[in-house]
Length: 425
Image (cartoon, rainbow, N blue to C red; front, side, top):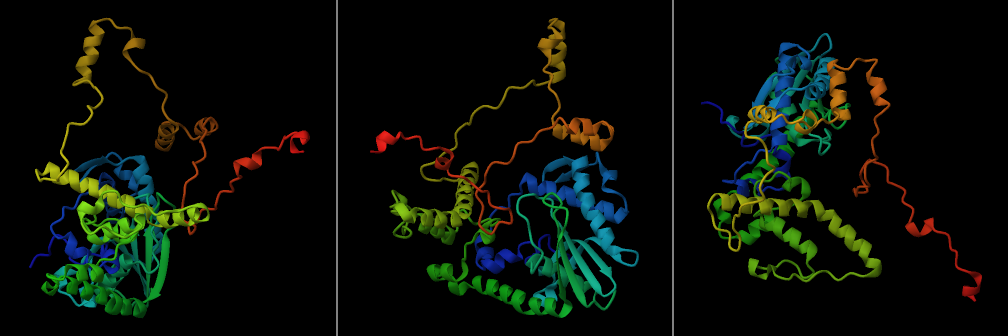
């Protein structure tokens, strides 16, 4: 029997179903929309695989064109540089006596107690060295930093590596899990645990999560919708982030509306009109802001998904009461054939300064030219001294954020009291 195209219990999505067991039921039949950013990550992963399997530097693939999920990317210096960080890290882990497996499919079905074809994933890098097996996950995104400690995705890859190599390659004693995110920071996030600890997690916590998800799909819940929602839907920022059903999820809708409405959630769409805002004043304002900010990302993501789902349905010809598709603003004008337009302008004897727009390259482009060798190593420092960069604008972040808090002086403190003495009498 050939393996299915998608793993039912995939490692990448396992944490989200642990957090919200009803997610798999709601996602059934929902389209999986791939973004350009995710596709770019797929392309970068391909470069990593080539570099490790062919034992070549990532720069060897500059200029190579990769098609991923309907998008086309050309490997450039920037991509190769970030991939090389992970390549160097994997080779350092391997040392002189280790073995590297790149882009390798692993199976962890034994630990989850499910059929073999239902529980597998593809690990970016596995390194076997001595009594340690090391699993490395390469993440090309630069949005959210991911921690390797007790990470369910990495734990399943580790279990898959044990199922594949334990006792065959070596009798492993420890498992190291590492996440390399070079576009966020060069140093990877690492976490070590014993083989016994990881296997115990797989047979207890992970297996229990699978059982809960299976129970959520039982027909017994068909006539108990409200009870099912309360039992299996647990909206949170992490659980909902990539959920395909969040636009129509009743629990997420209730969570969002319950946060911004004083008297809870309206019972039906007809009652969404004019929700009564929470009345706040004076000393309570800060507490109210804090409460809303705690759910702001969750609510904003939900609203974006609602807009996207509405657009998808209208484009598919479905009806969404009160809404329709209209023609948007026209795009910028451009030449249908720039070469023909250029030759035509030349026949009109238009002056060069009128015919062409000349613009100095940006510091970013200059940096790429320096990395490519077009600008020499002794020339680049001269240009660097001419580059300025503004400080980042103040940005609201949770108190748990690792960045130091800005010290802000209230505007009133910047002024001197110049009230005349006579006016104070």
